[in-house]
Structure formats: C-alpha cells, structure tokens
Length: 316
Image (cartoon, rainbow, N blue to C red; front, side, top):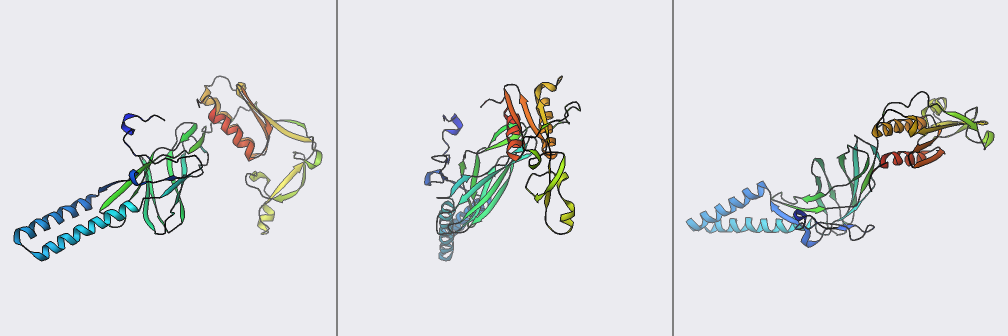
C-alpha cells in the first residue's frame, strides 16, 4: 500500500502476515518528555547551574544523580514497549448507530512485567492494562459507527509512561480488523407481508407450528415466547418448548414489496423484518435485487441475511 506523504515518515507497526502478530520493533518507538518530565529537566539544569556558580559539590552530586535517574527512566520507558505483540481479536457485529468494539490481544513474550500499557485512538476513550511476564491480555477499543457496511479499525497508538511518568513512549499501530455494521432497524414490515404456511417435509418430528411435541434445553437465540417458564420457576433451568405438525410457517422478506421508499429505508425495514422473524422463530427468506437467500432458521441464517443487507450496494 502506498503511503500518503504525511504517513511516509511514520514508523508504523504492522503484522508481517495476517496470521502473525504485529511486534513493536526498536526503530518504531517514539519517546518524549511529559510535562512533569520537562519540569524535572529544567530543575536539574537549574540545580547544575547553581552548583557551578557556587562551587557546591553536594549540588553537583544531586544534579548528576537526578540526571542519571532520568536516563535510566528513559531506558525503562523505551523497553516497556519493545517486543510487545499485538493481534486483532473478534469484533461482534452491531447495528448502525451503535458502538463497534474491536478486540486487541496483547502478548508479553519477555520475562519481565510491562505495567501501564495504554491503547489510544482519536475520539475514543483510552484503555489500559498491566501485563505480567509471558502473559496475554485483551483490551477493547470502542469506535462509533454511523453507516452500514464494514467498519475498519483505524490507526491507534500504544503508549506507556512507566516507570516515573517523566517520559512517554508510543508507537503507531495498524491492524487488519473489520466490524460488520448492520442497517439500523426501521419500522415494522407492512401488515400485508404476513407469513404463509407450507407442508412440513419432516412431519410431526420436525419444526412446525401446530402441536406441542416436548421440551429441550434452552439454546442461545431461542424465542422468549417458547421458553417454559414453569420449569424455570421449579428451578429446573431454562427449557424451550418444541412444536411440530404438518404445517411449517414460512415468510419471504421481499425488496419489491416495499414501494415508495429509498434504498436505505427499505434496508432498515427489511432488517426489522429479519429481527421480528427470528424473535418468533419463523422460517423466512430474503430477496434483494440480485440476491436471494432461501428460507431457513437459526443464528447462522440471521447473520447471513443481516450481512447481505449490510453489504448491499457497498463497494468492496
């Protein structure tokens, strides 16, 4: 990737390959005194100048001792970032307008601790952690999302002021991490778009809407309407009611059924239709211009439909 002129002189930390972590090298760390560090430096210079003026040996000793302390602090501040490894983690999909949470995995391969490791990004609340020797930690950077599509993790900084806060070391990091942004759910689908019923090929042992056939342990994503609250009251845990029969509830969410709306409004309505169908455990399919997803159920089908809505018309 060709760097823009302002970026050409930055020593960016990037992973060499997508599976490999990004490691902070020797020539990628910047270091500069903090405000207390500048005050500390001015005081050392004044102390040295006064000692030279009055010929005070104790003043010389104190000035050199403080200067040596500052040099040692500089080395420790620089080494606190050297060799730190960063890997992008998971970024769960969110809806437009919500905050995307990017997971950053930090690993300390050295035998010494790394206190005060801080992640910073413009317009984002910084996060901080302490790393023990040969340990890993997970931090999350939260970035607001405005539009649907893929939101890429922006450039962020890893910084440290360990051990005395007199100096601040930092480096710029770019990781390959994306968060899927679904369309913001709009109003409910038109009342005319009601589900139809078809013959269930699996019979009474399949998924239907006619008869109660039993209960099973609760699974993530099950409709609240089908939870057996009586068993929960008897402290038997969460259980879900199962229904079967010869009829299978099926619904099509069709782009062409929404007239008089712009593209984004249609996507928002269809997003609401997907969520409502999942909440009621309906079997549903999705039709978009050039895209047709057959009717199905489950969290995988839900993500597939919402992802198609999120990426519709978005340039790669």
